Image: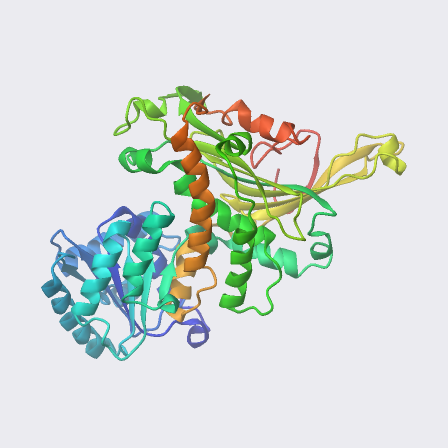
Amino acid sequence: MIYENKQETAAEGAVYYLFGATGDLARRKLFPALFSLYKEGKLADNFAVVGLARRPRTNEQFRSDVYDSITEFCRYKADDTELWNRFAEHFVYMSLDIHNVDGFRQLNALSAELDAKFGIPGNRLFYLALAPELFGPVSFNMREGGLLESAGWHRLVIEKPFGYDLESAKKLNAQISQVFKEEEIFRIDHYLGKEMVQNIEVIRFANAFFEPLWNNRYIANVQITLSETVGVEERGGYYDKSGALRDMGQNHMLQMLTMIAMEPPSRLHPEDIRDEKVKVLRSLRGYSSSEEVRRNVVRGQYAEGTLKGKPLVGYRQEDSVAPDSVTETYFAAKVFVDNLRWAGVPFYIRTGKRLPVKTTEVVVEFKNMSENVLFARKHDLSPNLLVIRVNPMEGIYIKINAKKPGSDNAVQPVAMEFCQSCMVGINTPEAYERLIHDAARGDSTYFTRWDEVAAAWAFVDRIAEAWREDDSDLSFYPAGTWGPQKADQLLADDGFFWWPVNGQEEDNVIWVTNSSK
């Protein structure tokens, strides 16, 4: 059934150009996202999707590929024949050599036909699911081919990675900026489209018992974990040139850190929100020497191990990986945000492959009660926690201390949980749906601005530089474990430890929850 408030929620009519339309991202994420938006009435009726790739395809073959994609990956099924046919008629395919400007001129002619057929007012959204080095040439050929001369708006959506370091990112941005204005460039970090990442702002700024405590007077540390059970799969060739720091640290990890640490924006306006995120990145304490990097950053690489009884090969045995590779598949770091709110509070971030559990969580640990106050004199009180679960489970829980039932003032940790994904289930909107819809509406709130990208690269480059100078600190960890022991020591040196994450909860906690435990 089409969403009832269609006119209220639908994006303006536009032609959507999917460069890399035969690739894995389009199949797994983009086609399902477009179908979900259409089914919910969030795409206007006057739209068209042009699939673009090198290999030949007929329109019928392309639509069949889209159908198969939706059948396998979409949260909605294409079981309404009439609805599917109406959706599919908006999809066309064109084989394109992206280095040939004549092909772009043909694409422009096709666009004019689609505008006339569907009543589209010249709006253009270009989604580049391509390698970063192609962003510039494709942008130039769009301009030379006349695609940017239509009457409506023009927006460029590009995937990470945006460069390999700050220098390459600057060159890439300089190329794109010759064709598109900054407000027309939408750099996707799909983690910013996730429900609970976007919910961080609401949790912080809409609750009177969080925001007054959200500072160094009350918070002991913040822990951000992004763990994966998979290895590099078929991406060994790419990953061996990237590593965990660039693949996850420069974008996902730092973006989540900014959402936790940012100041309240003056307005709920995209630029005001992004201004506050940039201030956080500029306040990150840089590592002044290689020795400081070694003290505060841990890098590891998975070796042979087991997960759930299944034997796993080490990273160096993966396809397309050098047998003597020193590329990190894991990194953890202690980071400080040097401003008045957060001075002295360590942010511990970690991400890795072949870890025991797939999860993304933020743990905010509050300072404990003074040892000389009331119950703290007699009991070993557990710190209060606020845990934001981003993926795969979505929700929050708060851990407090309470009287153990039936006891004489014995204290028991109690966790009160709200499981969002348990309530809405499979039909929760996915990240790419939100972000495509936002881009089509011109809402750049959850896209990264150039100064955000530059500030993140400036921080990460110092770590990468230290690692290039000396690779002797690479630690190995068995696949299926929680990474190098050095990562535990990173927190132990400060009197802390990594809190258990989703699926690894503490045994002595009583759970009060809206989901079954």
